[in-house]
Image 1 (spheres, one colour):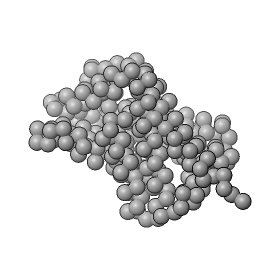
Image 2 (tube, rainbow, N blue to C red):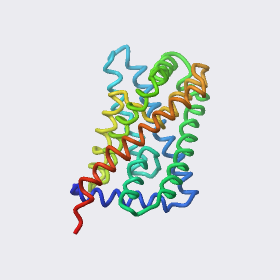
Image 3 (cartoon, helix red, strand yellow):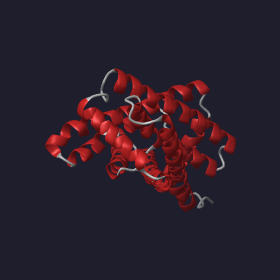
Length: 255
């Protein structure tokens, strides 16, 4: 395992590298990132709904245990996720390796294609294929989506902070691990935790709420309102509570 100072250097380098990718690479990897997080959420819905009769409330914990597969695939196989970039790319900015313009451009492109990937999974696999459009799976989808939408703007914002504090820590631990096993475990525990706690993730919400929309159980205006506040909270959690905090703690000791 790398030292915290070494992890910071790796994070800064990784964030800088993310901004240098071509638009095509960002678009493809952004779509993959949104789709992978959504497929992990789809697995959560299927497992939680089908396990409720047998496991009761514990089924939600089992769902939280399988959700991290999406981020694990992104980090090990390749993908770009805006919540991760909120941490890594901001670290490169704090380290004076990139400009504000480069940061904003990266976040904008990745956000757009994350949304496309998430909504694609919601429509094609959830609605069209039928994995979220009937029976107990539809009921679980609606219940989860409505719970997200029921949060006030301030609560959605604060929940977004909590979520991306853990997602940022997942990346931090992944960047610090020296082998695949360490990267998987370092990613799994923080992500499982934020899901089990019910914190809100902007890209995950871009799957679950549209999945409810496609069944006539929510509106795009409701989704937009939720997304904006959760997204802002995700920025604070990833860029502030992880990237900035660790930069202030470990990035001032050179020389």
